[in-house]
Picture (tube, rainbow, N blue to C red):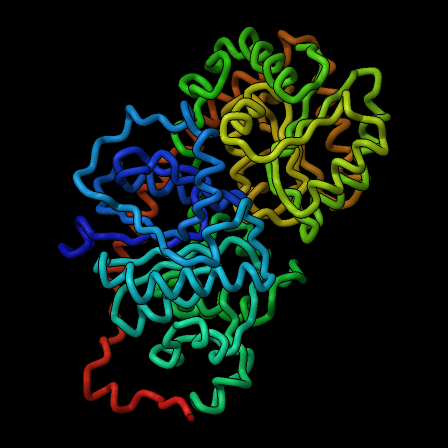
Length: 518
């Protein structure tokens, strides 16, 4: 890393973050806006960079209502005592009415979300970047996809981390109508077809937001090497062809990498203040039942520490096949394990939450299945009080719940693909190996087979199970190490800062800038 990059000023631009470290500025404890796993990943990386001594600044939308709603859910969750105080504010909230009054975050590609994304990027480009003057910009997902293009035009190194594969396509004219001077960086955007010139492109050739972020950034990253490999070898038919092509270009240029996420250090059952009783690997068998009883009481389920509990930790998103797979098999699961009184807990929001509640009512399963909105305290308690974490996702980009679950002795049940393949090995208790239950064929039979394996494991005597769970917890606490994630991120930033950049445009260059036709 060059001398410039030893202590660089990094601007992290993200549409969501689960919670912000105490010390980043006034009101840091109330900053919480999470739509899914991306918020957890950003939180962990921000914390890791703080502790590595980076001058980290955070830019995100000012979701006033969301912050207000979430503020009462956060006390006791983030461990402020381990964070050193910082002398100045590092939080930069983009201001616009389009995201002031949203009660929840349902980040999709509908017009409301697009308006939020454009307003957010406008404020970052026009106000926050000039104020922060960063040495490096790290952007997350399609809602920040235009910022690497602007950064390249300004000669600022950028890193772009992709998460979701869905992405809107917008005309330059639409982007400019929302107050973003796209004419200044239009050459660094990725279009549906090869552009001829600015005037021809502006109203006829849409910009793909996600692919633009990958294309324009000096370095692009994902959270799983298997996820990347699946996208590029054609196994995933849902990935846009233009994204695959650009990923190949980045790979061949040596500017594409994968950095596996690690849970924030506060996700540790031995120190987690959200739990009714903390525990480590040695005492989990004695203490986890207390957390299970408290979870059951909180979710209005029958209290019985001997029954198996499964936890669904991800968004209830109708566009994701994982949720549809579980919805189609839930009745069979409940009936098959009626005698064992299997319980299922959902701590998740999404457009299918009402559909889930309707399904629970239709199945008369209110004493077996419970659902609540995302709540940071309940989310953590669910890991501590559950035996299995349900992750039947088709191609998960990060699998952070699988990593967290193993720390808490909550074993994953998931599809053997994407990031889940990277962090979970099918359990072989006889060989003292593995950490969860994986199915290879993404269908109802595959999911039911994995649940059968998990329930067969649970049927063993508690003392026998405890030996395997203790091993898994111990291994996960060292294997999913935030310090290693921070080291890889720091190395990535060093590569970006040492990388030759496009020379910033001068006044003479501006004479060649395209002019908007009247």
